[in-house]
Image (cartoon, rainbow, N blue to C red; front, side, top):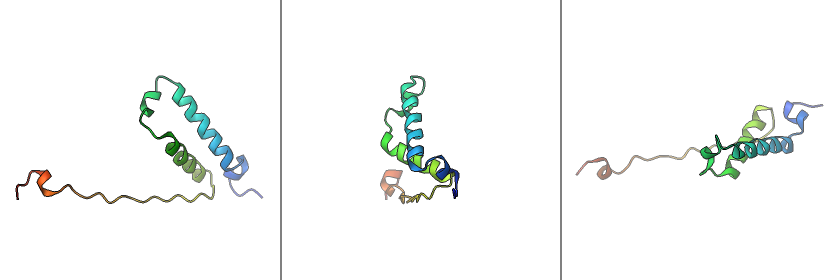
Length: 81
């Protein structure tokens, strides 16, 4: 029995193929491709594929680790102490 839309459409392979096809068309479109000039497309494809898989009910583990951002040292904020 199919438990989720994810399984019904073919799972990981289908989601990856659709995501890859989408970004190929985006990169071929001169009106928007410039937004992705400095983008790591492999990373973007992987994250987008995970996101879509989760939305469709796939059993995908997504781990988000928030980097701890420290304030700049006092001397770089204008303090002379």
